[in-house]
Length: 147
Image 1 (tube, rainbow, N blue to C red):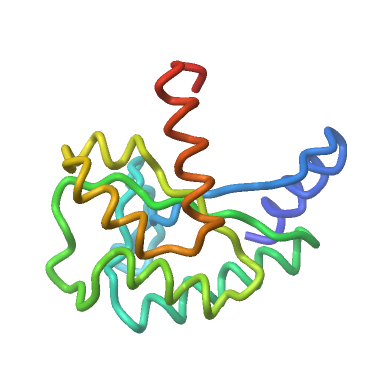
Image 2 (cartoon, rainbow, N blue to C red):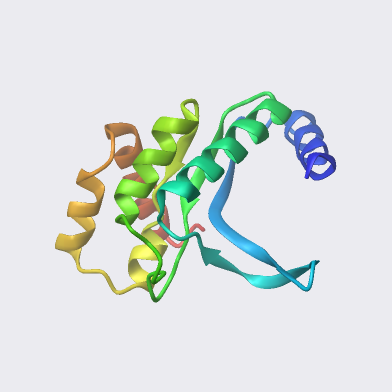
């Protein structure tokens, strides 16, 4: 991981990019002791154990890059059966434990999951104002079809 992140760090510095974001998901798995790539962004189960794992990885990534990173919630169609907390509780717990991390709430995820406007507003209400402003910004951009 550190070789990849060193390349990302060089790229960010070379092009003066102020923020790096990444989906909060996984795309690798092991089979018979060998790493495999799943070629999809799969949602992390919303568990206390995953909170600690993700927060540690975020801190490690921020240390290597020498700057804050942003995490974005991933699209999913079916919630993980082993989750023991809501997505908003999970994301907030990760943000608290990872401290300097910021978040990007994906409006595209909300549309993909066919979540109603009322449910979407309740989801937003669970986050600090900075997360909400990022969500509104992304919603405006996606409606303008810029991204």
